[in-house]
Length: 275
Image (cartoon, rainbow, N blue to C red; front, side, top):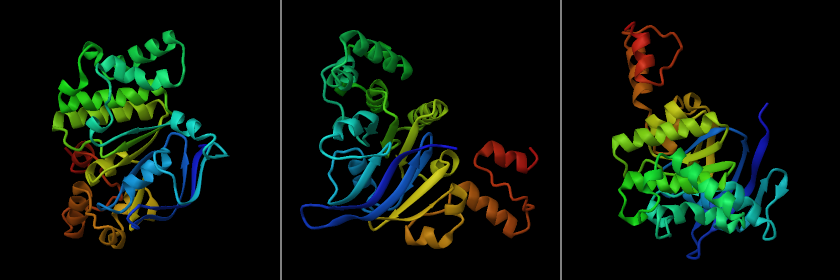
């Protein structure tokens, strides 16, 4: 049985202009989960992430990490163990070289120089960007910058990794690269939360889906439970994943036998068709 790693209780957040962004969010997150966070723009996903990561301070509610209520005194513990990869890598990257960028977080942990260098080398190798270590990051391509921003978090050895719209502005090749990295991280037991508008990616990758609407979680379930619920999809302004929509349409028209096996990939769909 998976252990509880993060507990969010009655989380509220109001921006300076008086706009309420979170309205009582409650959720338990367990070790090693692959969670997709979906919902329309302005539903509260990014604000939720920034509160969970300690960038923003909630107006009300509790964030409990490994049975410890997070406050100003132990906020550093939260930031050490929860890393966030922002949608736009330029908003995350601050150093003059890739090596300095990836080493910035470990250095702030006051680690010995040898340990910092070791972590940097491991993170660069993990993301296959060791050859870029002396390059200025702002001159890199979008895909390379994304690799650097992920290496930042890997070097921190964060237990929980948050990705805010990770495939935004990536071409298909780099989006495929990112998905491979996510699968590798999952195989190593990392807990991941990913905000995305890509329902096809959510359907095939996630094991759990949180649906946000008007600052609240209105649904929490498996991808199949969420995407078969037309009422929830309508409320959150979402559509069904393409494969699920095609499968259900073929079954409805009696062109395919309903074997109650819902394909999550083209390969699985071909097996159903007998190819």
